[in-house]
Image 1 (cartoon, rainbow, N blue to C red):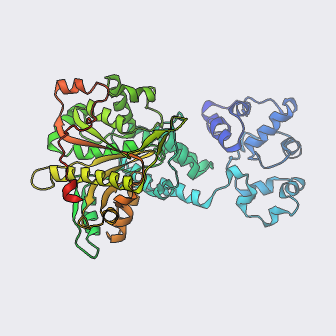
Image 2 (image 1 turned 45 degrees about the horizontal axis):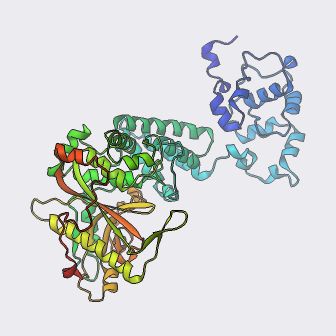
Length: 519
């Protein structure tokens, strides 16, 4: 009988890992215990075959495991020869009998021509890109430069996989039962595969993500230097640019954990990063948050649920069943407003719609807009943003946070305006020249920030930041903005009422109409 210590070294004592590699269910793997198994003559053919599969690495390799056991392992597995599941291809080939090699090769004797990887079951083949990614992740997380620094290790991993993250489309994920961490690991497994080395990577990254969640802080570390990069890039054109930009903003982009559903949270992080720098809001925000940093997505989900529990945005809460933690539910303007209102910061929502909006038979919004109506909407949005950035100002001690822009299916952060060609007489051409400066969380941080010796070119400015007003063709938009005011106790209670935060039609919300000057 083996001791507990010696038994723990056997690969068959890890049913979950073996099941993932071989496809055998954990309940069947549990049958294969060398120390407990009776002699081969007393075991069923199936159990004997499975024993050979586990101990000799035959799982999925031979078409008839029972026959293989009878011919090549009549005495059963030896306690002294625990051949690992990751046995190399040459060992497998030498381990097989002639008939088995022939049967496994197929009509064209593939084993004679195939490479080592092709002779392995598909589940155990190592894609060269996956193998490189595994090695790179293990290398950066074990580097002396980031050792012991959870956030730095996560940033290193995110930088490695940023290119692959772009391929994850934004799909409607009402609730697939997976939160940020589970989504991250699920997608990472798709990148690293199911070879044994991949499990070490998955376990290590999961531990890092769990540590980040426990600390509540976001691992991304943007800074305000990106605004200077954008200004420099805009200046690399034929004429001197005229920009109106916010006072402070850092870019927070998607990663494997929130790709496809986390745009609302990432935009909220950009707003929080700015508001934590605004003297009018920083003290209150730090007091209400109980920490001085930008929270991660899991922490923000809990903050939103707390806001709902306090009575904010009951209708929005009902639509999402009052729960967003450990889920991939989308959030939008109403949820962002509830979150910041619960933190005692005054924020409002302004609607922009085409003149003719209707509902079809299925209660879906349909828009019937002419070019004139599209132009009017674009002008109204631009005028509002122009007023916001000029009223609060960008000089002296005045502070201007960014704006939150929402439309169907996505949201982005408005960090400023390009008004260089605002004097163009033709309205349509003017809307093609002027535009919003946007941070789009559909990008990763490493897509937007310059790398190495990259320079801030005009092409970078046009592709990554500038969006002409003529490109805004959606039937409805919402913009959430801040006043810099901290809510009094009475105003805090008023925000619990349905419809709060939406300026009434014709009501003065502090913004002047500059359209006669601009258009």
